[in-house]
Length: 341
Image (cartoon, rainbow, N blue to C red; front, side):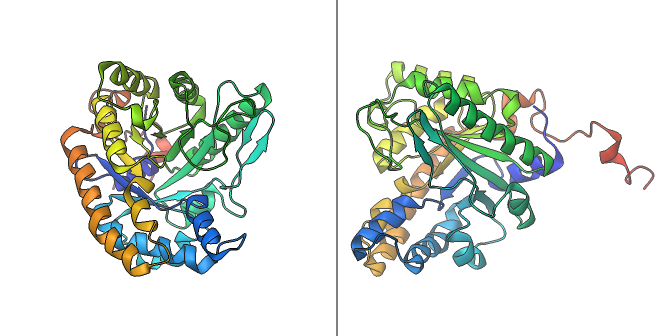
C-alpha cells in the first residue's frame, strides 16, 4: 500500500508518537438516544440531553485519547469548541437509521454530509459503518459493496483516510432478532472473517479497519483456538486495524484487546466499554461526570497501557513494505512547484 500526503497526515494525527491508536467513540446515537427517550417517556430524545452527554464525554476523555470519533448530529455542533486541536478528529458519515429489508440491511449517508464536507471542516479521517453479512441476499451484498466502494473513491479523491467499520447482524431468518447496536448473539466467526476478506480487496480503498471480535466477547478466553481466529482476521485485514467494543463490558473487552494485540492490531476505537457504566447513572449528571473522571478514566489508562505494551505500530504494518508508511511522490504533480526552490 502507498499513502498520499493527506492520508499519511491523517493516519499520523489519529495515533500517538509510537504509532498506536487510542481512540474514543462519541458518535453513538441510538445507544444514547434510546435510554434518554425512555427515561423521559417520549419517542424522540431531547436534543440537548444527548448533546450534553456527548460534550461531557469530550471534556472528560479527550486528554487520554489520541483521537475521538464525533458525529455531525450532536457531538460536532455541541462539543467541537471544546475539542483540543492537538487531537485527531474522526467524523462519522453513515446514518444510524439503516434500512431493514428481507434480504438484509442497507446503509446510507447522513443527510447533507459527505466526505468533502468532512474534509472541509478539518476532519482527519472519515469513518463509515457498514452492516454486512456475506450470506445476505445478493442484492443487499452488492448494494453494501457499492456503497463502500463509492466512499472509498471519495476518500481517495479528497485525500483523507477511510476508517471502515464492519458489523455482522441477525438476518430476518435468524434467532435473537434485534435492531439495537449490540454484539450479535451467536455470531459465526466465518461471517466476520469472510466480511473482512471481502472489504480488504483494494477496490474498496480502506485505510484502517475498525473490527469487532470474531467471537462473542464473552468467549475471548485466552485460548489458542480463539487466538487462531484473531490471527486469521488480522491476516485477512492486510492493513492497520483496531478493535471496537460493540457494547462489551470492561473485562470482556480487555480480553478481546489482548487477543487482538497478539494478532497485530494497532489499538482501539471504543465507546461503550469505556463510558457506558457512567452513562447508566442518567439523569444524575453529577454521578455521570464523577464516573467518567473516575472509573472510565482509569479504564482508559488500563487499556492504553495494554496497547503501549502489546499493540503494533500502524506505520510499520507489512502492507507498507520495507521502511514502513511514508510518502514518496509517484508523479510530477506532487513535485511541481518544489523543484528548483
